[in-house]
Amino acid sequence: EVEKIRIKITSLGLTESRITSDETIQQLFVECRLNSFLAEETPLSLPKPTGGQRIHYNYSTVINVDKEDNHAEREYLRSILLKPDLPADSLKFTVVSDPPEDEQDLECEDIGFAYVSLKEIFQNQRDIVEQDIDVFDSQDASAVIGKLRVTVEALHALRSVHEECKND
Image 1 (cartoon, helix red, strand yellow):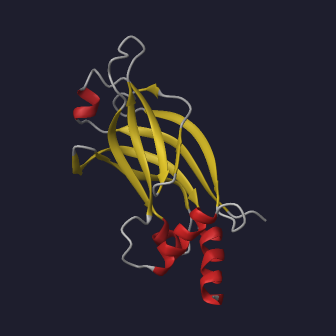
Image 2 (tube, helix red, strand yellow; image 1 turned 90 degrees about the vertical axis):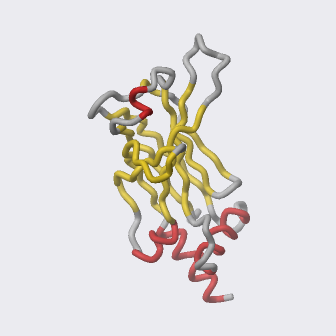
């Protein structure tokens, strides 16, 4: 069985903030990043949700972490389990503003970040399934600008890596 981390980005809702009132922010997509070497993004950018609404991506991706082919990913998981003070133990979700077609001189802009700690999944022995996580403002890390509903199934892979660490 190929070990993997399954990630699903279900939906995004925004709370009232500079983001909702900024008219240059119209279309949003979400990127998911594992450490430095893997980034996936939703293929669609969707119109910014208005008050109380959610936009639905229903985007799933899989990160393979088997020993044979995905050594770097696996080593990274090992380091999360073995080095308790490693700061980068999270999957990072970035909400990105996609400039409108007629404004091609505008850049894509990161507007918010959300995190899922793989270490916590292992410590709690529980995957995260269809859970709302806070999205923090990229300009003010203490401000929550919305909720991202995600699934991160990593426990099986983390257990397997942990078993290996014990056997080394």
